Each structure stands twice: as structure tokens, then as C-alpha cells.
Length: 503
Ligand SMILES: C[S@@+](CC[C@H](N)C(=O)[O-])C[C@H]1O[C@@H](n2cnc3c(N)ncnc32)[C@H](O)[C@@H]1O
Image 1: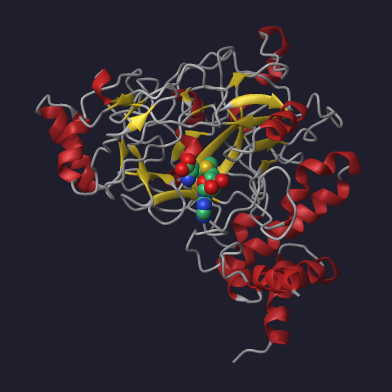
Image 2 (image 1 turned 90 degrees about the vertical axis):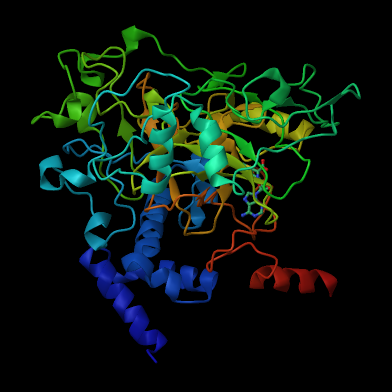
């Protein structure tokens, strides 16, 4: 058996290769060991968590104290509650959506990337996709390895060939996995009942449920079990419950793009986008150019906080450009399903997906931090919000009235169903700049962090401090099932706390 000393030495050596001196590594290593009480997660993926945490602590030390309230939650490795683009991420690199988040040590280093070096790693559109159309779900936007699951794709193409409803055929094929829910006894706020169980996108499918404490829903939105997006997305996303329960997912208004709640200031005026922030002279696919354009050049880089800058309306290229992924919206076949594992509803993919595939944006209302706190004080029934890290870039420290966050509780997209998993989640959130160079507003895009099998649940690490007192996202008893779970009922520190409070 290898001794602690040897294992620590190996960690120092690995970090030494990345340029981190022992005295910088040592406190972080101790902290992580205390956290996991186990070497395995620290050694996993060539010490990736250790390197991430060192980078995070470096960044937090550089940060003015007043801005730390946003990122203090990031003291845990893999934190993603607050998504912070890397301020140092200015290294010119050939454009690609580098999702090498779990590779070897070299991926930890900020390195110039050349698409031609390893074209299968590049995340770009191979050909123009059809414009948004409900009945023709396109392949997930990813790289040229993105074949998807052969089984599910076969079903889809057959469905298209037969001219039948694609979703219907998929539903039949995947039975019993894919069973439309029937909210037979759903009751609305006025005590009226509504029934829905067919997979046809008709009003008969629309179900309502009663959420007595939800004052915001005066006019209750309904769920269409055949398509929770109600036609907002280019693919249908059904709701299924193979456990036969009558319950429905929480009610909310489905939106495809972020909406400003009230006071959030997001300036998207064209005049603010200078030549350096667009590529007016481009055409075609900017990711395939031998000299990447200004937008594509900014993409890629740092492992800890990668950042993507997409081409946009002030650029010469079109919607088929490979550097416009999140703007095109969801293209993979997803499903909202009841987990029956104590996590409520979740999101899963119907197809196998490669690493680096775009899943969806985390869409919601854009609020200022002060609006969010006010809202939470009035109503604790919130799903988990994400803070945009206001301290990124040169805008200085923003006040709570200026700092922004995304709240998908009342208005959101399917991103709101992505459940938490400790450390080894299969999705990562990447900050994406699209329509404004203002660094206090950006989009939150969910990409696959590894290869995912058809019907696997999609998860991300919320970065919750299960032991601490994070007032933004109240910790729940984590049921993620990860061997690295830090928030489950059997979490050793929880037990310690519980027994301490009993004494
Ligand atoms: C963003 S929502 C995810 C969708 C949610 N499951 C639902 O049914 O609407 C976050 C909430 O889901 C639940 N949740 C997410 N991940 C969980 C996990 N690993 N264990 C237990 N509950 C979880 C918690 O109640 C959390 O506050």
C-alpha cells in the first residue's frame, strides 16, 4: 500500500510539472484531503481537481475582498454555482470549443490550440443545419465524431422517412422508458382539474398542477407533456414518468432566451460592439479559417474557467458558422423525466453524445443580485440560481444593484432540470459572450464533459458547499449517487454536525 507521504509527493511532482511550487500546492492538498478523506478523487484525471483548486485559490487571492461574496462559494473544487470566465483568458488560439476537461495534464495548461492539430476535438458545425423546425430535430452540435447513438438515430431517421411524428415513434420505441405522464388529477389554482396523457401536441396534453404557494403564477402556465418547450425549441422535449406517478414537473414559463426581470442592465446596442469584438469581413465558417477571426480567436484556453466568444449579428458570417453554437439552440434529443431517486425531475439525453456536445443554455430571468436576494427572502421555493461573476474583466467591482444572476425558477428552459452531481458530473457550464462585450453579462452554456450514453441523466456540479452556510443555494440531502458525494445523508461531516448538535 502506498503511504500518504508517497501519494503527497506524487501530487507535488504532478503539480510541479504544471509550474506550481510545493508551498502553493501543500495547503490546497491538505484542504482537499480533509474534504474527501480519500486520495482517489484527488488523483483522478491526473490531479485535475487539485490543479483547478490551486487556480481558483490563486484567483481568489487576486480578487478584491468586496467581490468575493460572489465567488466565495467556489472554494470547493469544480464549483459551478457561480461561473467565472477567466480574466487571463486572452491567449490567442485557433478557435475551437476545447472541451478537454478531463484529459491528461497537458490539458491543464493554457496552450495555443490548432484545429488542424486534432480536428476531431474541434466543436464546430460540419454543415448548415436546418432552420428551427419542430419536426426535424437536428444532430447535436458537436464535432465530427458526433455520430450520436446508432440505435436512437436509426429510430429517428426511420421516423422521418415514414413521415410519421418523430417523437411519437421514439416514444413507442423506447417504451417502457418513455411513457408520457398522465396528470389525471392535477388541480389548478382555482380547484379545476385537467387531464392530459396523449403524445400529440394538442391542448389535451396540457396539464396543470396546483402549487399553492406560488403567488407569481396568477395565470398558471400549463405543461405540454409531448413538448415542454411548447414549440420554443427546434426539437420537442417530452416529459415522461415511467414510475406512473401523477405528479408534474414544477410549473414555469418556458423561454428559449434569457429575459430581463426588471432592473438588470444589459446593453446590447450595436454601437458598443467595436471592430475588435466582431468579424465583419468574415463569411462561411470562422472556425475553419486558417487565421481565426477576432471572435473565434478568443475561444479556448484555460481549463479552470474556459470562455467562448461566439460570432454574432455584427459579424460577416452566417448562422451556419461553427462559432455560433449556443445561438442555434438545442439540437439534441432530450427528455425531462422523473428520477425516482429523491432528486425530483431530471433531464436526460435520448442519444449517445460525444464529449464537447452542446446541450443547452441555462436560461432564466436575469436579475440583479439585490433583486435575487429580495426575491429569495419572499419565496424560498427556488430552483438553483447561478451568479454571473461580476468581477471578471476590467469593469471593476460591481455593486449588488449591478451584479447579475440567472434565475430559472419562474421563467426558464430545460436547463432548470439538470440535477446536481458531486464532482463527476457529465456536464460543465461554460461562459459564453454573444451579443455584448460587457463582461458582467454572458450566457451559461452546458456542454458534455465526457462521452454520454443514451438515456443517461445529464448532471452538473452546482458547487454547493454542503457543509457551509451558502445563503444563495440551500443545500439539500444529495442523492447524486457519486462515489465522491459530499452532500449525501451519510456524508461524514454531516453526521458529525448532526451528532454535535444533539450533544
Ligand atoms: C435546478 S433544480 C433541478 C430540477 C429538480 N429536480 C426538479 O424536479 O425541478 C434543483 C433542485 O433539484 C433537487 N436536486 C438536484 N440535484 C439533486 C441531488 N443530487 N440530490 C437531491 N436533490 C437534488 C434539489 O431539490 C434542488 O434544489
